[in-house]
Amino acid sequence: MDVAYLQQTKCIFSFNPIHSSTHNRRVSVPSKLPVINSRDYQHNARRSFRRGSRNMCLASSSDTLVSGKSSSPTVASKKDNELEEEEDLKSWMHKNGLPPCKVVLKDRPAYDSRHPSIHYVAASEDLKAGDVAFSVPSSLLVTLERVLGNETVAELLTTNKLSELACLALYLMYEKKQGKESFWYPYIKELDRQRGRGQLAVESPLLWSESELNYLTGSPIKAEVLERAEGIRKEYNELDTVWFMAGSLFQQYPFDIPTEAFSFEIFKQAFVAVQSCVVHLQKVSLARRFALVPLGPPLLTYRSNCKAMLTAVDGAVQLVVDRPYIAGQSIVVWCGPQPNSKLLINYGFVDDDNSYDRLSVEAALNTEDPQYQEKRLVAQRNGKLTIQTFQVNVGKERETVLDMLPYMRLGYMSDPSEMESVISSQGPVCPVSPCMEHAVLNQLASYFRKRLSGYPTTLAEDESLLGECDIDPRKRVVTQLLRCEKRILNKCLEATLDLINDLPDLSQSPCPAPYAPSLR
Image (cartoon, rainbow, N blue to C red; front, top):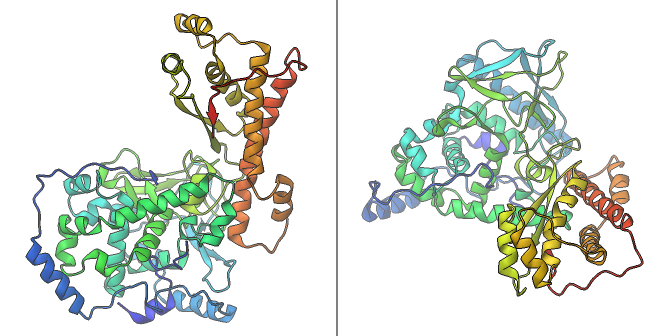
């Protein structure tokens, strides 16, 4: 590998090691699939590998780690200039089949002066809705079919052993080792430059330090991040399997056993980098549905209120814009119907105008309830489970609270005769007294207050913090997320309190409920 290149750029699989069903679909690899290796060969391969003098991108190498020490703006500028001396991404693409297009690569300064500026795709001329901004030929796409050399093997490997993201990450790590000899060198160099950062200059929380993850205190996303990180480790443990089963990788890198060539930290960083830029294509074969598209994300800016998306058309991937642009304006694409929690984990940003944002509320019938089985049958008859997750969509908070009430009322029922009446009825309505309704609504209100109190800051404090100019990018994006979550919870609480105020007799105390449903 070219050492100078390592010194000039931050390896996509060697970010600062601090710290998805996302895109992950799994299928079991049939036990009858032929095994390519033998134990003796594997032993000899490992021994030869250890003795080899190849350059490897190891986590311990000072050349490949992002230093935690501050560098001066002059150093960052020098790195920018050195990067520009190489063939830029767009020129390389045109040389290798990219037809004339209507976009240009521009850059904006990074928040951190130690890091290179952020590139983004902008209109090179005025565009109108319906214009094709660019069309990338299949020869410039990185897909599983290209990585694994065989569509059947691609389907087998991504069914229960490795996700598509893991396969793509492994391929890029091997290609990175070839340095300038790799066909993909200009594209990998661009990914290095972006460092997995979205357009807000923030990496996924999967790469954050433990102290930075504490920014997420009170939010359910913190547990999601830890769970996703554990899933990535399981994928890492399966890397040797894909190496032996994928003929293209086996032939090209016969001695580079993945778990010896790359540490877990390097793999995790590569995985997150691929996660931030992979495109999910529709109406294509399984081996082509996840693609890395030069000129695609993270160079394109994601928006949740946009209709433009990258689509597969006649052996290419093209972008048709959904709105007019003036020359030099950043081009945006749709990120899919993802809540802000997924946008932060996958791409490192939060969209304040995300109409797909939501929070989850989990309600569960009490298993100690003598009438648990009867209530389970009633819940199932009405399309609910004994442990039911309610999705609270932004703007639909009151509707979700109303949707939860029949389930909660069912859990509060204790009279066997009333339970029998409900079982024999066909609708979801449970007989409810004013005191029971008061108890149900009180439990919901207490639950929403408890969730809000779990955040270290108030909504007003978040608004004040976001008004400051000098704020760490990660802290800013987390504060945006927490503000969105608190707004949803506050709306739920307001809707619940409105229903309490509508009760006919507020002087009546709530009914006791020995087997009330649990909420979390």
